[in-house]
Amino acid sequence: MKNLNVTININDDIYLKDPTTTELGKKILFNSIILIDKLGIEDFNFKKLAQRISSTESSIYRYFENKHYLFIYLINWYWNWMSIRIEIALQNLTDPNEKIKRIIKALIENSFINMDVPFIDEEVLHRIIVREGTKAYHHKTVDTDNDYGFFLAYKALCKKISLVFLEVNPNYPYPKTLASTLLEVCNSNIYFAKHLPRLTDLQFNNDLEGMSNDLFDMLYTMTQANLTYDHKQNSE
Amino acid sequence: MKNLNVTININDDIYLKDPTTTELGKKILFNSIILIDKLGIEDFNFKKLAQRISSTESSIYRYFENKHYLFIYLINWYWNWMSIRIEIALQNLTDPNEKIKRIIKALIENSFINMDVPFIDEEVLHRIIVREGTKAYHHKTVDTDNDYGFFLAYKALCKKISLVFLEVNPNYPYPKTLASTLLEVCNSNIYFAKHLPRLTDLQFNNDLEGMSNDLFDMLYTMTQANLTYDHKQNSE
DNA sequence: TTGGTTATGATAGTAATACTACTAGCATAC
DNA sequence: GTATGCTAGTAGTATTACTATCATAACCAA
Image 1 (tube, rainbow over the protein chains, first blue to last red):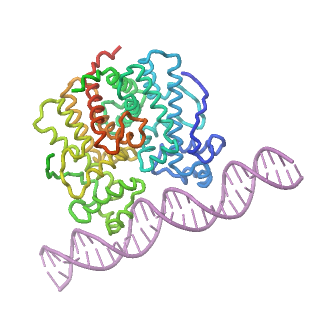
Image 2 (cartoon, rainbow over the protein chains, first blue to last red; image 1 turned 120 degrees about the vertical axis):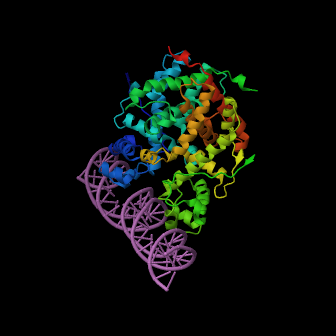
Image 3 (cartoon, protein in one colour; image 1 turned 90 degrees about the horizontal axis):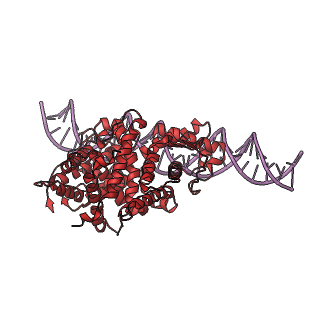
């Protein structure tokens, strides 16, 4: 396990005041994750968060315009964090297939690389992403959010992965789709195994740890199948 | 194009009073779809719907406990409708590869089979499913919803598709995951092409129609790649 | 030390949301 | 012909999601 201290940069249009610069800001980040995990994003609100951290609604509104922005902040933090984990995991590697293995491992294993950010509980945040992450962009105002650059972190991660796919097979026609699919299938199948088991072939055994070998095999197989498939044979 | 009149059965735990049995009920269904499409599920509410149909909130509450239940109803209607379309599309077919092609066509093409239900606009409903369909189960109360059988329609569709995959390759290890992935990738890539184009290789050309050939090729290729991949070569 | 700026908190208020309790009209059945 | 039930409407309440104003404490510079 590597131990690093890397700062994670968030698009400053997302917040009104940088929460990492003050004690209250860090408390907002840390406790919003705990509370969203506990309540779900729908039942989470600034009043409950204020009570939890013994502060007030209006103080929280000084950092984030509303709960959607706070949610977007956390999502961006996660995908930036994941990008950095993958960056580290790929260091000094040349074999593209080995790179793919490392990428999938980074996506699955929380303990793979520890970056020790005291005001973010990565494991709890991961649970939120698995359950509700896609809500960040599945709504009516996705286009204005996108114009503000709220999804740059996710798109950058996707691009990074798709470039590795092209290293394996430069003629593969759907690198971006395969990358976004890998990210989504990874999380959705963790979620399905736990809550809707008929939608997956994965078996949930009490924790993510026990499932991670099967999940790795599934994702790696899926990726390899697509990248090594002869795409000419389809044109008939 | 086939023209049929099939009734779509919805789990009666989802509604308080069957909306298909009264005029008001049908107006609720028809106009909720239009309004959710226009506003998004977050900004949609029963007050706005009541105004639109010149009725009252409380009258709507007689049909559905809350907007989440109405949303679940529409989602179930859609997946049941899709199951029936696929059922029809597979009639008298024996070649499993041909079946897969028909399934993908049914998933993509709205005009493929017209069932003429006057109180549901299938095309608008499809847009809602693409944008917000996964929110039906991505929330904190998924387990109780699941216990009530709110996701049976989706699971049945998934099972139907996975059985066809096993016809092509009885040894394929991930039929359920591939089925749910097919359903999700289909919708997410339509959505990405329109709103987050860097997450897909599909090109959006003003309408779904113009994109459907590329989408078909992508989904069929992905499915075939997985089903024909030699899964033993991975165990090293 | 003073004076200004920043960070937070206290308090109150508003508009919208989500839901509930109660009432009224009408058809049909006994 | 009145009892019943089914339909739909009126009018509320509690909560949510903010917004606005003022107070105060900390800290920083002249």
